[in-house]
Image (cartoon, rainbow, N blue to C red; front, top):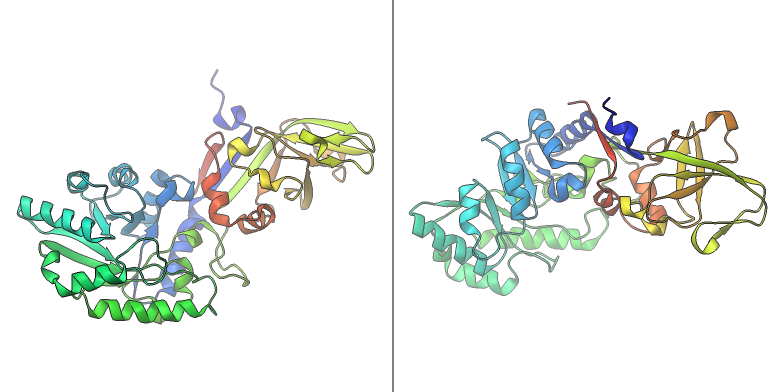
Length: 369
């Protein structure tokens, strides 16, 4: 007899593809005349690029960004031929022919990357598509000021390249009041004047909400697609995409003064009922959530008590009627009023890390689309 993955697994990760596509359409509408791409790097922020990207394609998305070449190679076969896959990190030296053979477009971040792509174009006798990234303040990837000087003084270095896009990346777009936003916008305008005419892209998820001046020709949302709030300190306009539920493995009673878990980092202040759940830091439930996170069940939020261990967490379920809980009952770690951003706040991190940390042991359930 076959047993379902949900029955075997200790926890379920549910991904709502309809909510994901609704978020993309909302961001597309916010972007006005600009095209709306999708950033699906890190396996679509941990949610499964092989399922996420085709759903977004069906919703109308035609431009997809990943970080690494191997991510792009894996993504290319699951998308139709008219979808474009961009590699944000550019190409490792010597790997340029791989990008051509798979029909990928590199984001060129340095003069050596530009030169290697141009040499291949000349060797093949054909123009190769490319995106050029300029650094306007991140100091991470993209042409630095001196490299931009060199390139603008010798535009022949771009001969053989079909420049489809010039882009940069915002530092603090989630904070609309940050002065660096305006400074980067000014630097981006100035950089474009020194480069061949091409379509432009500056806005990430949060940048879309900075207004039309940041939209240019293409916006590149990532985190907001997956339900993460795009603007700090404001209500989240995005729909929740993820629900994470973990099974009760065991229930027990402990007396006042008894400790729970490694190091007895939590001690009962009253007679307490403890539920042990089948999720731990090996599943991406961060150890920093020890004694801080809350768990949802039937309209209540319950405290995680004690340290997160490799495979388990423990929850104080004293307030839940005993007949409502048993072995196999599912409690919400994300969902049931607990957003990704709230979990991130409890962990002292950001929603991006929560999503991309979710491990492989969950039974993944895709709904919609």
